[in-house]
Image: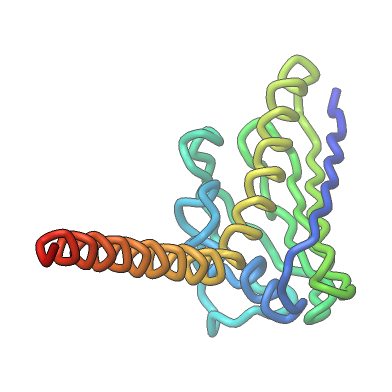
Length: 183
């Protein structure tokens, strides 16, 4: 007896909706930052993000290494988009993923929803746990990807400040040592 799984999570990310839209939905960009995906590439066609475009995804080993074909739909740049599996995905009859991007002061509210239909009741709990982990890690990694340049800048500034403080301390030590010698 098929059972449905519905998971929906939101997070606020400090970036514009159009940037997040491309990061989340463009397969070549997504595979670079999302640890849940090993491969994502357009299947045939011209390789553009459009409605009804087919994309072949391969999950990481942590997600059973499942490989499947999905069809993009409901694309409304930069507000929302998503895909739906064309055939079965392992124990799932159907798997869909939907993204919404809502601009707000200081960033964008990103909502990721994953829906699946499990073929067998006994596998529902472990699959639901896997999908929940997929949603959470994907959202956190998206935020980390966007914050990475800023975090790197802060880290570089911190190192530079430490280096300057160390040089000043060494100069002060040398000056104190020279003053003691003159006495």
